[in-house]
Length: 95
Image (cartoon, rainbow, N blue to C red; front, side, top):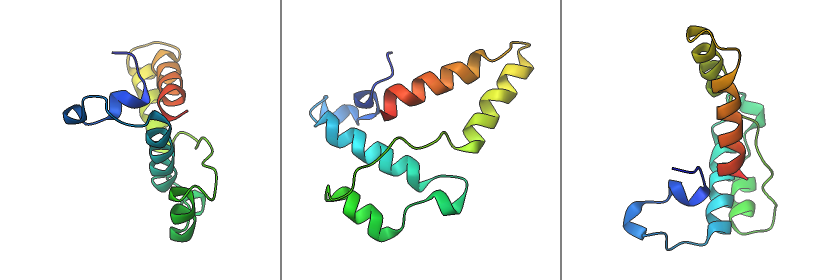
């Protein structure tokens, strides 16, 4: 399956969602689970982002996810294929 924001949608909704709003919600969620606490938005910032008062930029890949993809690369004796896949998928889904 091609990685898109709509691929994250509950199948019961049958694709019936605003992709732009879904992308915004996904980006906000990824900001909220950042490994480094100071990178996470405050509750007030999340509310402003939900209301559309603040833009939601593309968050960095969480360190644990990046470490996991690097570990997979090393265990499979490949240079960085899983890491490239994680980054490419991250950008497609979250962007």
